[in-house]
Image (cartoon, rainbow, N blue to C red):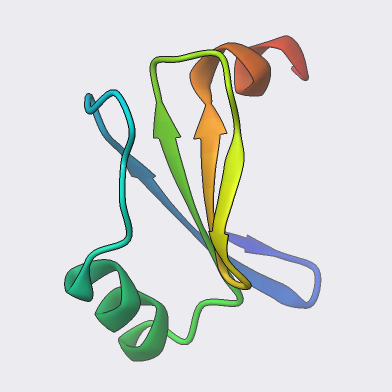
Length: 64
């Protein structure tokens, strides 16, 4: 997804606590992403590193 001046990747996971994987970092590099958002079906969002954020599906839908 492209937003003005930013390339954002979005990945959906069913896991209770998604972790950073080699493939996530590869996607950030190969697709020249500024950030990768990993959306999962829980209520807590957290940052894994400077370009990788786990986002709560609940919080993501509430901002719409």
